[in-house]
Image (cartoon, rainbow, N blue to C red; front, side, top):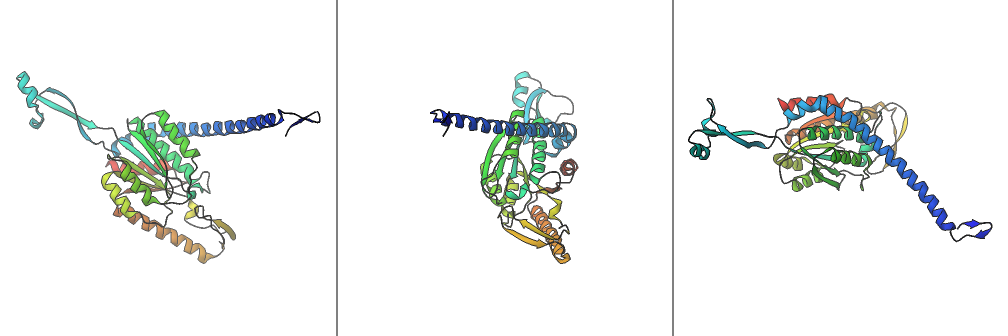
Amino acid sequence: MGRLGGAFHPLGLIIIIHYQSSIINSQLSDINYQLLGKVRRIEIKTRGLSQNIFAGQYHSAFKGRGMAFSEVREYQFGDDVRDIDWNVTARFNRPYVKVFEEERELTVMLLVDVSGSLEFGTHSQTKRDMATEIAATIAFSAIQNNDKIGVIFFSDKIEKYIPPKKGRKHILYIIREMLDFKPESQRTDIGYAVEYLTRMMKRRCTVFLLSDFFTEKPFDQELQIANRKHDVMALQVYDQFATELPNVGLMRVKDAETMHEMYIDTSSRRLRQMYARRWTEKQKELKNAFSRSKVDSVSISTSDDYVKKMMMLFDSRGR
């Protein structure tokens, strides 16, 4: 309680609360400014990439829903007779044909893993930072092509669903959520997330599944079913530390999803070999799962130039 001149002051509590509230508001303002700064930096970088680099690859890699009727015009030599509009032809006593054009507008869904393991990173950024940049680049490429974009954040549950929309304001909201979102769970269930996507999205859409794929639960069946209905691509984001252990002696490690801690002796050559072999085996299992599901995929390290990796994926689909 507050005191003034040695006596109790009835406004003391209010003064203290107001003072503390001002500090909290100031801290929140600082956090908001920092967040807005991060959003802005990501927008500048990824928007430039989508405009200058990905524009052609994205357009050619992803097809629209089919051909849509555009207009009718008079028949010209060489036109396909199957396109003749007989009703209009009869009305004007001369042949007219229907003109079709590709229906370009797509719905793009980002299926983003927000489990605890994505917070890890030994280079200049975490796996989640990398996933955010990749997702932002895809999102800006989508709106350039007049496509809608939506997001599903998942752990071992559906953390948040953002319905597909168009526009820069919508994309900035998505980026902000990716940077600042705090999941309720730290664990991973990819199969559950993919199954939710299949149920939620009634019309065919293009799906980018972003994850490190650190999970012991199989998801092949759900991925196969989803890819029959939608066009699914898997983007694996990983840290180089996952491929091999450094030789630094005794090390304390913690599982970011189960919070289990233990000590390991990285000076043990046998342990390092087992660790590297386990990574190779898991990658082989993952590639086989994608192959069985007929899902295009790419693996991107936090130390990689993700632009090159994404362009390789887009180019392979555009052929």
